[in-house]
Length: 197
Image 1: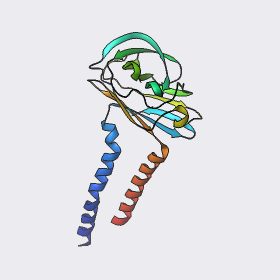
Image 2: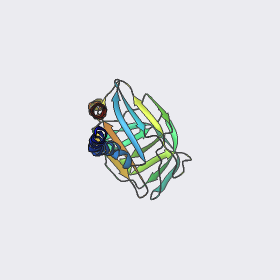
Image 3: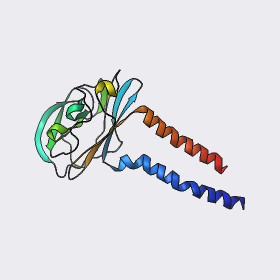
Image 4: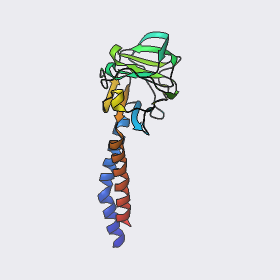
């Protein structure tokens, strides 16, 4: 009898766990490439989701062999992620979405990894690494040292740029909200484990 009651109690909480998992994963389903910006340790870090790919279907080739530098310019919706410096890129046009993600001016990262790619919303353009082929993976990070969202002029929220074949999502996540969500999920799981024992 005790065994059956435990199973019933576990089933009672399976829906809330499923709902919580769906809530945590909802942003992953929005785009093949998701860029998350967080304030961490006195820095602002941008990183792409592991294994994110881009389908260029629906975009028009605009420029081959251009040079572009990694930077952000929130007021013009410019988001170019990767290591500092100028990088060879191919530019496509036909992107639609928000024209900005804040009121801030131009800033250049202090460090980064991967191959530079980005969105320039003011020109409806997507920049991909030179030689990139549709369906390929995108992986990059950028770190802006000794700063925060307010100083960079970034507005927390979710921003989605899309075209016929795909989209890119930027999640500007304040640490207190991210920590609260993660902490709540861990607390709920711990409470459920204790209750089922």
